[in-house]
Figure 1 (cartoon, rainbow, N blue to C red):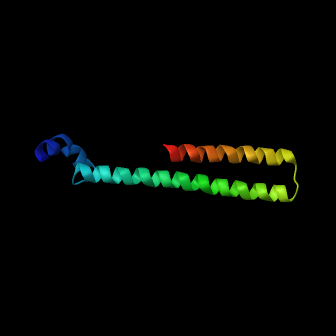
Figure 2: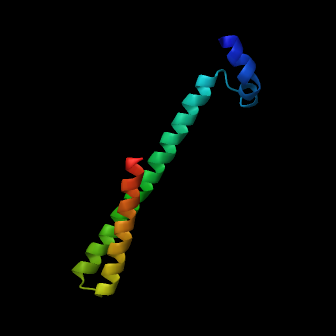
Figure 3: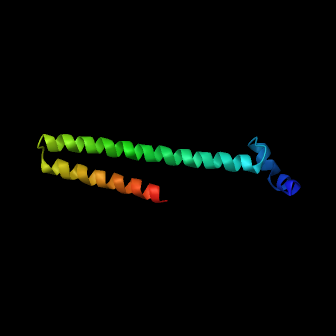
Length: 87
Protein backbone atom coordinates (compact mmCIF):
# COMPACT_ATOMS: atom_id res chain seq x y z
CA UNK A 1 0.00 0.00 0.00
CA UNK A 2 2.79 2.42 0.89
CA UNK A 3 4.41 1.74 -2.48
CA UNK A 4 1.19 2.48 -4.33
CA UNK A 5 0.77 5.71 -2.36
CA UNK A 6 4.36 6.71 -3.04
CA UNK A 7 3.96 5.99 -6.74
CA UNK A 8 0.61 7.77 -7.08
CA UNK A 9 1.35 10.78 -4.89
CA UNK A 10 5.14 10.90 -4.94
CA UNK A 11 5.47 13.87 -7.32
CA UNK A 12 2.81 15.82 -5.42
CA UNK A 13 4.42 15.12 -2.06
CA UNK A 14 7.85 16.03 -3.38
CA UNK A 15 6.58 19.25 -4.96
CA UNK A 16 5.09 20.44 -1.68
CA UNK A 17 7.87 18.97 0.47
CA UNK A 18 5.57 16.64 2.39
CA UNK A 19 6.52 13.33 3.95
CA UNK A 20 3.14 11.70 3.48
CA UNK A 21 -0.39 12.30 2.27
CA UNK A 22 -1.48 12.42 5.93
CA UNK A 23 0.77 15.46 6.44
CA UNK A 24 -1.09 17.20 3.61
CA UNK A 25 -4.49 16.21 5.00
CA UNK A 26 -3.55 17.41 8.48
CA UNK A 27 -2.29 20.77 7.23
CA UNK A 28 -5.34 21.23 4.98
CA UNK A 29 -7.70 20.51 7.89
CA UNK A 30 -5.80 22.99 10.05
CA UNK A 31 -6.09 25.65 7.34
CA UNK A 32 -9.85 25.08 7.04
CA UNK A 33 -10.33 25.36 10.79
CA UNK A 34 -8.18 28.49 10.88
CA UNK A 35 -10.16 30.11 8.05
CA UNK A 36 -13.46 29.16 9.72
CA UNK A 37 -12.36 30.65 13.04
CA UNK A 38 -11.10 33.84 11.40
CA UNK A 39 -14.41 34.29 9.57
CA UNK A 40 -16.42 33.51 12.71
CA UNK A 41 -14.38 35.95 14.81
CA UNK A 42 -14.72 38.70 12.20
CA UNK A 43 -18.50 38.25 12.09
CA UNK A 44 -18.77 38.20 15.88
CA UNK A 45 -16.64 41.35 16.11
CA UNK A 46 -18.83 43.11 13.54
CA UNK A 47 -21.99 42.03 15.36
CA UNK A 48 -20.65 43.35 18.67
CA UNK A 49 -19.67 46.62 17.01
CA UNK A 50 -23.12 47.00 15.45
CA UNK A 51 -24.85 46.22 18.75
CA UNK A 52 -22.79 48.88 20.52
CA UNK A 53 -23.56 51.44 17.86
CA UNK A 54 -27.24 50.54 18.01
CA UNK A 55 -27.27 50.96 21.78
CA UNK A 56 -25.69 54.40 21.44
CA UNK A 57 -28.22 55.46 18.81
CA UNK A 58 -31.12 54.22 20.91
CA UNK A 59 -29.79 55.87 24.07
CA UNK A 60 -29.42 59.18 22.28
CA UNK A 61 -32.84 58.90 20.64
CA UNK A 62 -31.39 59.25 17.17
CA UNK A 63 -33.45 59.05 14.01
CA UNK A 64 -35.41 55.87 13.69
CA UNK A 65 -34.18 55.52 10.08
CA UNK A 66 -30.59 55.13 11.30
CA UNK A 67 -31.67 52.64 13.95
CA UNK A 68 -33.72 50.66 11.43
CA UNK A 69 -30.81 50.57 8.99
CA UNK A 70 -28.39 49.38 11.65
CA UNK A 71 -30.86 46.76 12.87
CA UNK A 72 -31.10 45.41 9.30
CA UNK A 73 -27.29 45.24 9.02
CA UNK A 74 -27.07 43.52 12.39
CA UNK A 75 -29.68 40.96 11.33
CA UNK A 76 -27.71 40.20 8.14
CA UNK A 77 -24.47 39.71 10.08
CA UNK A 78 -26.21 37.43 12.58
CA UNK A 79 -27.67 35.39 9.70
CA UNK A 80 -24.20 35.08 8.15
CA UNK A 81 -22.81 33.86 11.47
CA UNK A 82 -25.67 31.42 11.89
CA UNK A 83 -25.10 30.04 8.37
CA UNK A 84 -21.36 29.74 9.00
CA UNK A 85 -21.92 27.85 12.24
CA UNK A 86 -24.49 25.51 10.69
CA UNK A 87 -22.22 24.39 7.80
